[in-house]
Image 1: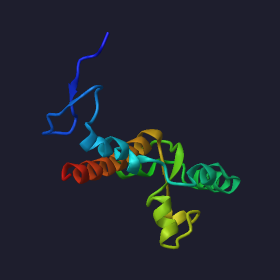
Image 2 (image 1 turned 90 degrees about the vertical axis):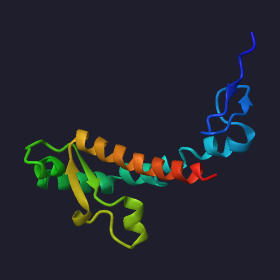
Image 3 (image 1 turned 30 degrees about the vertical axis):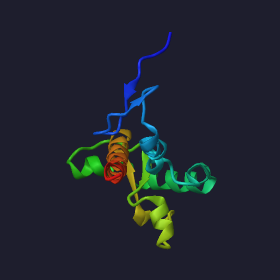
Image 4 (image 1 turned 45 degrees about the horizontal axis):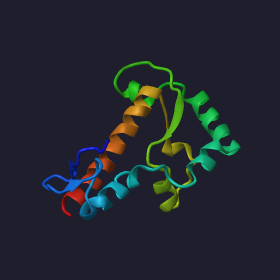
Length: 133
């Protein structure tokens, strides 16, 4: 059985499409929608390296509490080491991503919150860009 046509997802566009999504004029929106949300190139190699694992372990041993929770007056054990500034940005400006001054210990909850906020900011920027088209 053939499916009913649906309206293009682009706000204000009333063209009908065969399957849910965008019309030919707005197909580029779907293609580029998550472009800025991909992991930085080389992330898997960097975070999987023995050098990073040793650095991370040493940092967590010296700083066992979640930095964000500590700022809010809570005492929570940190689960992972996070770069305060994104690693590609550090590398681009010539800073060492293993330098402890750029690191902080976070609990999983605070790290997830930070990631969601960063992803939302990127998604909002992408959305604004394509709303103009």
